[in-house]
Image 1 (tube, rainbow, N blue to C red):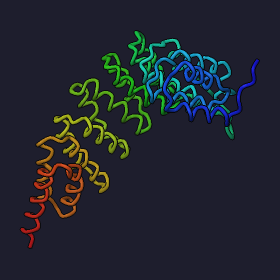
Image 2 (image 1 turned 45 degrees about the vertical axis):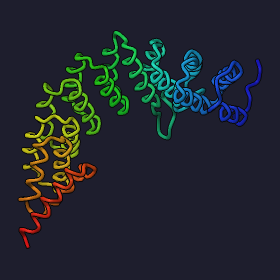
Image 3 (image 1 turned 90 degrees about the vertical axis):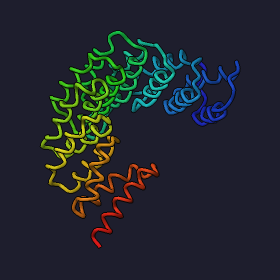
Image 4 (image 1 turned 60 degrees about the horizontal axis):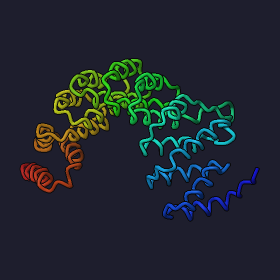
Length: 313
């Protein structure tokens, strides 16, 4: 068997290939790079191929993926190369269901001080997106399993993938998972996905989490409601904001209201600028700063503020 070129030599070749046109010669050089025993080089190569949208190398990427899977920890420590290959194939709209299924089910336990850690969560997430993009028939079943993944990043991507799928079968899965509870950041992803899949039907369900005993959950849920831009979320956010005791959480509540970007939300904040306490008015102005790039609207904010100041002189 021919000896593989040294790492430095392969890195130099990859640098030369980065912007080189595809010819029979450079095509063969790309394949040579993908056959490298160095996972770091494969990771870089896969990323470049994705950025350049070079779909002619999809089969070569898949072959490299298969090779790395044979001795996954030894050939690809930290699972970076496999995850990058899966991400590239997803972005290049590959229909390689076998690869994505293998990846979404792959667990790679690696030794760390005091035990082991699973390094394949990102790979599982990338493969989930790949299966959704190719409209894999049983993708919801795979995503349901991923919602129960022990690793937080995998659960987050599972929620995003369900929203991306636009499949209503994902709605009960997300509601169940949210009811079961999770870390605040992950829980907010379940709720954001619900608002994308079924905004009207999910609004009351999501808004109920504003009453969670965990303030971080309240904060993230408020921002999710704001990002949804659902006009009907305004009443829930205003009612919740009036109940807030924590000053920092109150600022977040006003920001969430501003993020709705509706006339009603804007008017509520302008009324606070005009008639609220000094502290509340300043918080409302801070929330309204997201409109600063809108000249006419920001002028309106400034006029209300100036009027308030003149009334107090």
